[in-house]
Length: 223
Image (tube, rainbow, N blue to C red):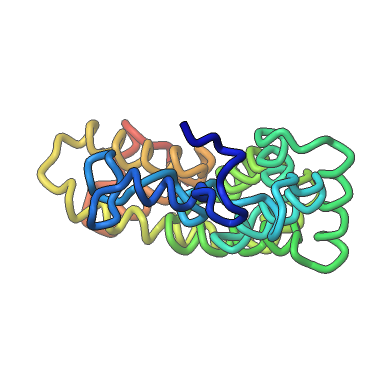
């Protein structure tokens, strides 16, 4: 028997040679003959940091999360803070990043509130009360809310209410009077208009449409 130690130097078969010898003549291995072995770099999990596998520091993670969310749409500070907490970012790291974003203007609750009021009033016809409620749910401070909704004056709010009622009048003609009144007043109430504004606007619209004021007195108070 020839022992391994008797092989001339350099003549011992290498591991590469053994692997090649284990494959078929076409160079494919015995696992199905498709040449697929272990997943290489292209199929591995991407590292958290380029060139390494160590996770990003919490502040870097927080910055990346905030930038990604702000790219989609404006957010309030509270919304971003909640998103960071849900992703397990420590409070101190989240606070540092959020404060820095405020300093450079990437977070601006006042600008957010102003844009929200303008968009939701024009697009949905929401009144100041409904707008303030929405902004509170997004974590905007009361003083900022008051300033934002204060830009929408009572005259503009009532004009918008009248436009909403006029659109609804066209699709409620022929309906029972009492049911029609409930629907019109209820529509304004759901959009945040006060009872006084809703009743006044609906009554005026119906009178202009031709309803008898004396008949309306039985349903709606006069001005």
